[in-house]
Image 1 (cartoon, helix red, strand yellow):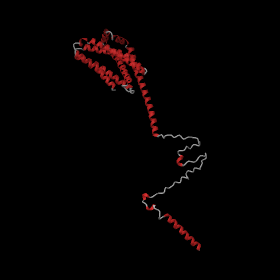
Image 2: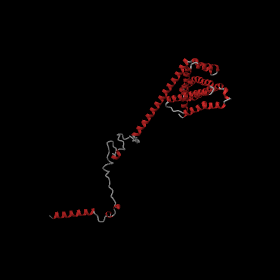
Image 3: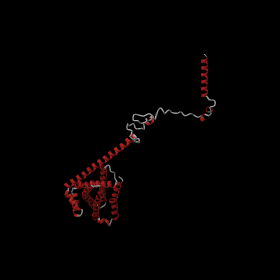
Image 4: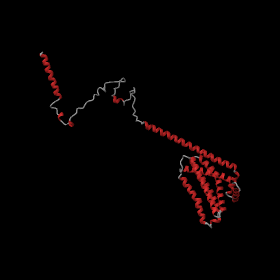
Length: 324
């Protein structure tokens, strides 16, 4: 009985000491301000996670779960880990789409341009070949009429006799050749884009045809208003004859220009332009001989005609083509 009493007394004294240790009256931390109290760091038990003495089957130390993602899981201990930059899926997809779209655009553009170029070339060659087959005699007379005034007068009488359709058909060949040559020259010099060859050919050919029709109508109006109908009609016919002959030369030059290498296109263009300039100067001299009796008596009217009909429309057409 005395043993149990001593046991209970000793146990109570031990519990009293443990409670006093929990609330030590000499501890200064509870008496300080909350901001000045020292918090004891809590040590994370990492010893159980990473044990340096644990070895895997290959004889290497085991890595922690946080480091396992950065360690190569290969069974070969001599493998090296090569860091790779993360690639965004959206950027890779967009890059592949851009490359595929560029390839498709280039292929489509090249196919369209080659097809239109071949089609226009066949159209021009077909029109020129058919006109030479059916109107070969007229072409020979027109070429000789460039240097012979009597043959020019004979062709003029044939047109007055009702052969206007023949001249209009051969005149159309000049419009096609001049339009196609203008498109190729402007594309070579960078004034026109590389797409829409067929639409460019149609618009420019229509513009050149409209310019020539305007010139013929203007000459007809001048001949109707003033007493110079004979001279204006003859000069209008001279313009048509020179254009018909020039159409054959431009057809050959344009076909060569269409399929010649790029480094040889500039000399071909200048040769064609030189031929056109020579024909224009020869036609202008023929026009001066036709209107020789009006040059000195009506100088103001003559200069007005030159500026309004010869120079003005050409400058307007060049401005339109360069801004196309």
